[in-house]
Image (cartoon, rainbow, N blue to C red; front, side, top):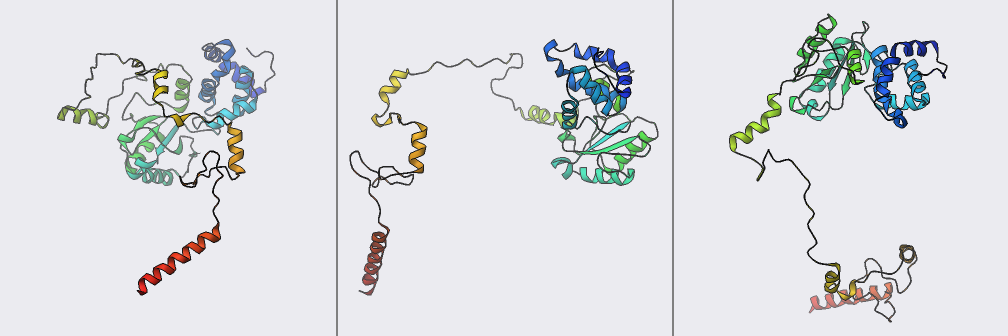
Length: 320
């Protein structure tokens, strides 16, 4: 597959294991769009090494005809690709706005202290990698935590500790919603586009009551979208024909609405270097020049003199 490229021993060993699956991935894309296979190929590498290793970057670059810098740029952009060896279970705790308000930060802090690791760090037994997540898209179950992207809803510090302790002891506690829990390597293989053949690995997740709360309220109070028919497919709204023709609109337009024939460059130059005939943005109707008449230029000294006269008149009126 990449016989014309010399690989390092580590990358060559990876190629020997992954070439058949890599061929399947690349075959999903048009021949001239093979680089689109990079994302699933990176997941494939992670399913073997547990992270995107330097050998994995080299292998992906060789397979797709890219440079290692191009592959590395993609691998470092997405947080789902781990650049360091990760644990068997990736525990992600949402600390974004709603989960934080509902106690997500307390869950993360408790786990960090209990496991003795911080963000994106792995326990000494290589079982758990902990990270805080900006959003896990499950606000109606806040605070939430995922293990290899499977959800545990409405977690509290003590229940989160219980879950990670079960994981470290070899158990796989069932997620709140979804199928049987898997390892990070097994999840990476699924993300590369290959089915998980373990018994119970695929199942329909239950619909949580929090998700259905809006539907329940709508049913209770008889709220529905006016004129909505669930059996009618959604189609495009037909464009309405114009009510008037361009000629009719032109006849109704005022006489002074003719477009300015000056080019944008000329108008910009006049704005930067105005002369006596150039209207200012704050020009009043009385000050604006008329055709054939010079613009009125204000005299600051005359304005001050007029202001003094008005003040004197006011003082005199008060004395009377």
